[in-house]
Amino acid sequence: MSGGPIINGQGDIIGFNGRHGNPLFGDPFVYADGSKPTDAERQKMVGLSWGLPLSVLAQAAPEMMKEVEPAFTGLVKQVYDNAKAVTVRIESRSKSQQLDADQGSGVIIAKKGKTYYVVTARHVVQYSDQNYQLITPDGRRYALDYSKIKQQEGQDLALVQFTSDATYSVATIADYRLQANDRQWVFTAGWPKGESLINQRFQFTVGWRFSSERGSILAQNTASLTDGYEMVYTNMTQGGMSGGPVLDTQGRLVGIHGRVESGEFGGVQLGLSLGIPTNTLLGQLQLWGIERELLQVETNSPSEADKNQEIQMILVQLVTMKAPPQNATANDWINYGNQLWRMSISDISEQAVAAFDKAIQLDRKSYAAWYAKGLALREADKYRDAVHSFEQAIAIDNTHYEAWQQKSWALFNLKQYREALASIEQAIQRNNQDAVLYMRYGVMLETLERYPEALEAHTKAINIQPHSFFAYTVRGNVRKNSGDLPGAIEDYSQAIKINPQYDDAYNNRGIARYNSGDKQGAIADFDQAIKLNPNLVEAYMGRAIARLGSKDMVGAIDDLNQAIKINPQLGEAYFFRGSVRYLSEYQQDGIEDMQKAEQLLCHQQGSPLCQTAKDFLKEMEAGR
Image 1: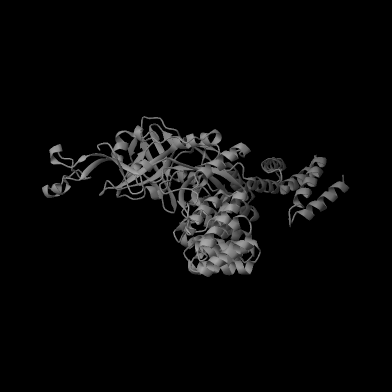
Image 2: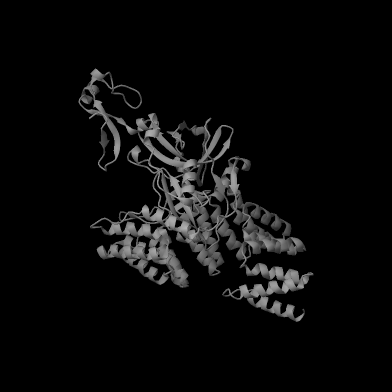
């Protein structure tokens, strides 16, 4: 039977049989640290079968361990090849027990001479009592020097390095932001953990990434939106993929994967995947002394996928799904519904709700089934039905704060503000150490213009997460909107100190500085926001207004032109450009701009500039 497979209880091959232990073969009995057993210990080993572990085989002949490449085509194939070229595996072994190994992933992001720099999640390489090895896409192994690993408290990011004569691909970093209501296709990649090396397949999944605004609503658990996590996406991910890349449809790095929302409900896991966006990564790299010149950074957004590409990506999602088995349990249907829900496609979302209903039919007392159904209904904008599902979950078990939190957002969207606040207060009673809960509470209070209470809520969030630049930014927004401009500027400055690449903080500080009378300081902040994000339309609008205040009409029109180029439906940009043009030598162009402004602004429900645009247009046409 020499050479035959050794198979564990799950059917995985974990090694190959070679021989029985026998001193006549020399001394096959050696412990992991190189020491040999005593005579008594050796006698106990005689008669046992001994095999060649896959870990040894993998190191001795990595080409034998290569998995079959998936049959991707078109855009998906291009992104897959790019992901495979820049994604590394990072193994950690205890210095005292060398056979025990853990695993994570990483992304090659820069090269200087023969030194390569790899970004990963901090939790992958944070312990000094571990030996770390990095495995490159060609299977070569490099020992990592722990003293050279860069880490930062409050950010789940780390930078490691290795030196090699070999040539490896370097990821292109994409630095742009999604608009509030946007979502985009993204891909995650990495090396999931397995019970044997035969399971260490390269994992590549497709899903939707949401804007930071939308993500802040969809994220649900304590782990969400802390330690730099601001990116929320639907991709199915597994342990071992932490530190791996999140890529856009051009194969460019848009984030570092690190977490799956951690809510465990009766044997099933519900929630989304979480990553740290490249905006935060670039700020951290700057603090670590990685020169921008070493990085390949692009700031343009990818073009939208066409119908054929959309079909390709949906098929990839469907192929990776595990349908419920025969005689499926309630938990089987919940897990299946969760996969369907993550696809975030309307007709499939209905199937997700149907799957959760199947689970409820099997177990009407399943908290997880009612809670999951509420998530799917809320995502489909069926807020009233979602509230009902969350209430059913709470009636079964009211100790979980997540259902109270999600119910509050659904109620808020129904404009039932008093009930929404009461619900999130119940969530806080059950978990008063969740910074995200306080931030959401603060946002609700701010929307109702209850600024002192909102300020108190955001301050509690900062006390819990003092390294969160996002927490300082949202508190700065409250201070700005309540008229405390010095306090707002102080908060935005602190956010920038934590993350020098955070364009929103520069933009908001520019607004606060302009409102406080510092026009040149405002323009400098808008300049920096635009440098960091050339597609940030709000910064062009802010700089245009600041330039108007400084009598720079030419510069203001240039900024308004750029704002309209980025967003041709931006009524405010036409309004200001029309006003400037009319007062200059382009009177007819000004009238046409104001006509466009009136059309767009009055189409927006409750726009404060609608009536003003109508009045200005009437005066312009009368004085023509």
